[in-house]
Length: 258
Image 1 (cartoon, rainbow, N blue to C red):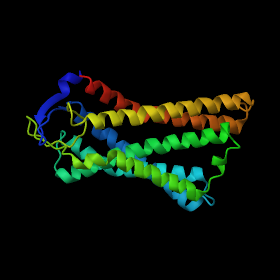
Image 2 (image 1 turned 45 degrees about the vertical axis):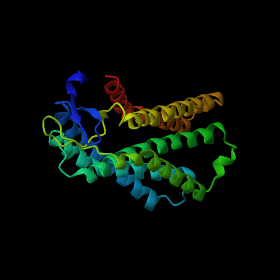
Image 3 (image 1 turned 90 degrees about the horizontal axis):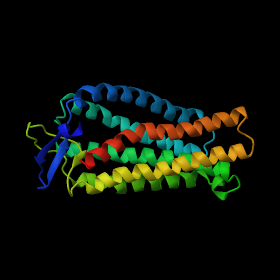
Image 4 (image 1 turned 180 degrees about the vertical axis):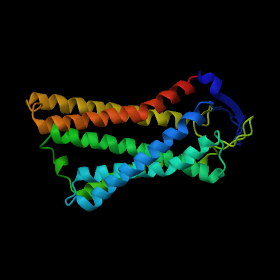
């Protein structure tokens, strides 16, 4: 039960908070995070290498995919520190400022990954469902401008993390580094933003996926081999979105309502 994994502490902002602490996490998460780090670094590194040296002509969709790989790659950089944190039984040894930077990087690149994954799905939707739209002919410069705007939005959404203190001394004298806590006021914005930035893009991804499949079947193109592969790719985007982000959001909702 999650109730057994909650420990209270008084933080420096004088808010009474409950820190989520479970004895299973230090045993389960480090091996999982190591695997994710190795696979994620290799696959995203390979994707960036392929985009930079083997794609001769860049399109708007290429720009979005490159930025998605960059967001995922930057996310991988934080995982060794996160692994060390759980390996030390949820004890942070690197100080307050590095803690804030790591949590900011995790939140920013998570949001960036979600937004670029959503943008890829919307780009596919417009190209298939609205093939004659002017949006389909935007230049790579315009796509790069859109990508920069998304990065700016993600920074603005998550910059508040840098202003708060997430380390605290618990009853077991652990120095934490975790924004995953229950504070009546302090983490209200973070919790709701964490949940909102998942469900709104999820609705968009599912809508785009459903419309694309329906449009292709309406044109009787779903039996074409290339089109079937494209449909599988589109469905894979939705599956990746749900598999990667739903568990953390579900846990946040459950803990938040304890």
